[in-house]
Length: 123
Figure 1 (tube, one colour):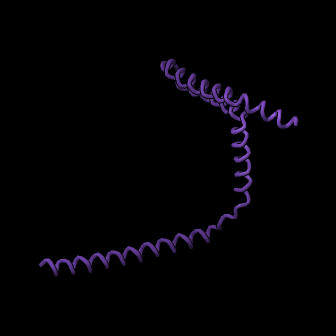
Figure 2 (cartoon, helix red, strand yellow):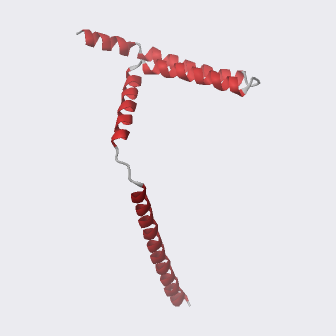
């Protein structure tokens, strides 16, 4: 029961949090334009700080938390992937290049044959 109440409380304020995120992004865009005569370094640092704050606020929402969980699971999944060795990659690349050359030659031959047949018909 307490978990349900906590979930309702969290989702109740999600709209407000997303509004704050949008307000921060709009303020950053406006501030970047307003202070266009300032150094680019300072504007970039300010935008990075605002982006960090916006991401932190967004992470406090239900969808933001779900996105963080997805990113963590994706990182763990990438670690479990068996990447091919250099030799396997080279062999696969050579097979693809050979297949492209063979198909290219076949298409060139077919095109030449059809051109020859059409020239025969047209005269």
